[in-house]
Image 1 (tube, rainbow, N blue to C red):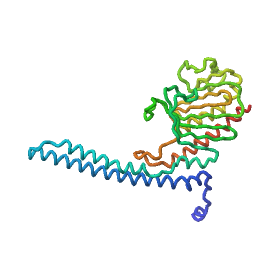
Image 2 (image 1 turned 180 degrees about the horizontal axis):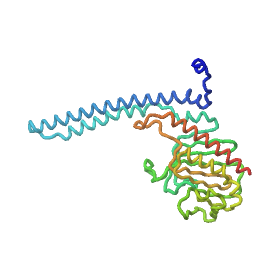
Image 3 (image 1 turned 90 degrees about the vertical axis):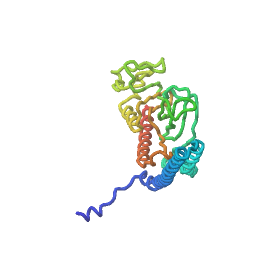
Length: 309
């Protein structure tokens, strides 16, 4: 029995698992090694300068109490200033190292995706599904053609122009452009109370008994009968799967012409891999990211079939 178990063939790995092990894991491990190296240097330096500053303060206080010397605040300040510069050196060296963009390397598994890590500060988000704000930060743009559907994804932060580190809101924005149109405009969002309002006054609320899922969403359309062709059971299943896999707190959708916009609030596509004080790069995050791209592909293909009806 033991011999049979030992000789049993191993489960064949998926193409992504093979790509991940051969291309991503070595990069992750190297990045984690560099972080550990420079973090160790940082903590060792920090403890040394704390000891030096403590000793310096004792010397200054001893001179003042025993010899009547004037307390030299200048000496303590200069030693503290030099200490800060010394402590910062490991961080500076880490930032100066040429780092491989692991996220960009990950996307190479999907040959139809292009990626840009450029950040854009704009005053118009370009979509009604994104919460209103004076300023927007658009980053980590990914574009692809999936089954004839043009797909664009980006991370969005809202806030004041000069402060996006503490955003007023953030999320992942999707735009799908199809070759055909359902000839109806639809607005959908998570239930926001008894009397949710549409951004578009010309759209009418779909009755609860018309589409069962409307008890969970605020849904508006310009043509209820045509909207039913899109808002079927499969549509809601795929939309909720997309919301779950991206960990969105709320979701908002708008279909107009051949464009479908989605905003997944409190979610993000990109995760930091190079932050010095951040956690080590987690391999599981890339595996989860792969599931997100898989679900996005399923959603794009499903919506394409609805649009063609």
